[in-house]
Length: 171
Ligand code: FEO
Image 1 (spheres, rainbow, N blue to C red):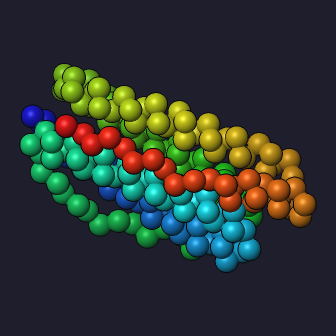
Image 2 (cartoon, rainbow, N blue to C red):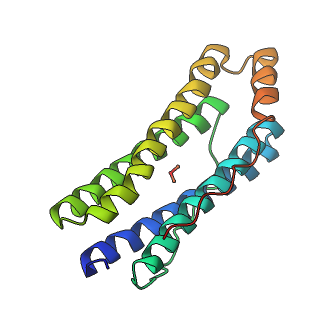
Image 3 (cartoon, rainbow, N blue to C red):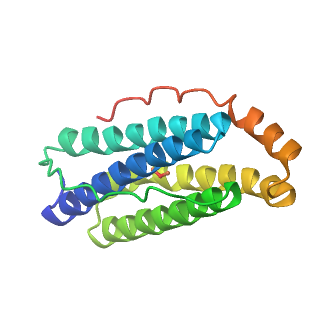
């Protein structure tokens, strides 16, 4: 069982994770159009990962007897600038999501909802990993800038990212 307040907050997070998926799909398309297939692949896998973040929340709400409220998803931008700017926007977005997860955890603590706190702990750890992954790409990217050879090497690395493993069902 979850309270109305938790149900609403979890549904809002479903919407934010949907937006994340949408954003990375748009970034994937953009990277493809500027001739960076490896970047495009990385963003495409990130889209897949965000889709899993959506369904994990969705499954949890239902497993707790809650109601799903799917809301309108905002339109992501069409242009993302240079390769460095693409990943700077990715980092900024992940930092925003980390803030949202922290807010959500704060509500679960206020509500004394221990099950939701345990559930959200997965997202807390996931955000540490997400930010770290992006920082690991941004650092060499900032070094090479727009330099062709270095950029191509990073693109080849990003082409190797595999689809995420399926997540265990909640509840
Ligand atoms: Fe679902 Fe990248 O946060």
